[in-house]
Image 1 (spheres, one colour):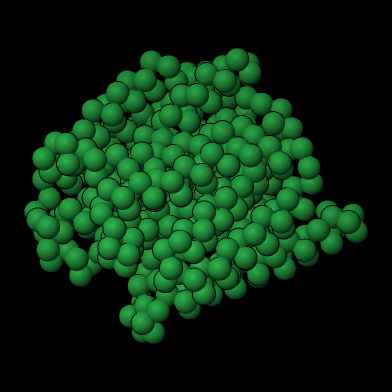
Image 2 (tube, rainbow, N blue to C red):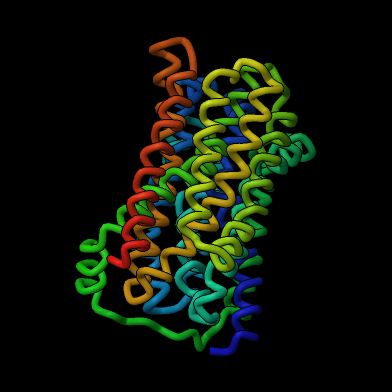
Length: 389
């Protein structure tokens, strides 16, 4: 397949992912405004803003498989057309039930991540897979666009409902772009799913990659969900200011994703991911003991953003390296675990705060998860040095 076509598809699919993530995270930054019209929703906030990650995570497996079978163009196109329905429904929401229904189906936007990481490596040599997947992953910046832009649009247009409706235009535009510019001749992969599943599940590295991405991408998603309302309620910042700070976290993590992929291409990827998780462990400890200070909390968040972003790029260097023959299953599962990694932390943080009156335990849990991941990385490195794999 032509690398020239690959470059065109990399650009198109990266911006398509950006749009998917804009929609996926639409609820969190607008929630402070939404509860003014639907006050009873405040009691269900953690659940509602986290719900899109459920479908967005689970669907990553079938999206990856479908991309191999029918191509990225059709999967992106169908996703954008279908997303118009829950976005429009959200703009008309008047009850908590309406918000819950819309939240679930907004998850389709997050599932689009699996499309590019499955399709794009087909166009490039293996020594470029880390960087290519890292560049594609920059579409995550759609989360920042929504975190900062949605509250601003709500202020400019006179309400959150009007801000949500502007997303209908964007979705329709990118559906058209995929229809006309998507690669109609993309190479299809139709390996038996049972064989892919069995081969992936029998390899311990598969579970390591799932766990690593559960942490790195989970942190990215969880902080994007958690920060807007936390900064408003805990530090008494304005909605716009909280959105701006959250957008900064997302932008840093997103821009560093291709750096992580490039590091994995140029250096020993196992060593690079170990260094990254040491950094995440340190940032988790910093947040544990200093989160009540806005300045130190900001420093801790910035460090978390740096290492999570690099880690996200690094993990997807390993997937085509170890599971090129099981790409549909491996990409889908690893991407799913990353999405699920963003669902649980906001709920854990809320429950630990309600139980203890502090967020310290939640950040301790993040630190402990990173330490456990480090042990798995050291084990994998020992196997590589012993030429066992």
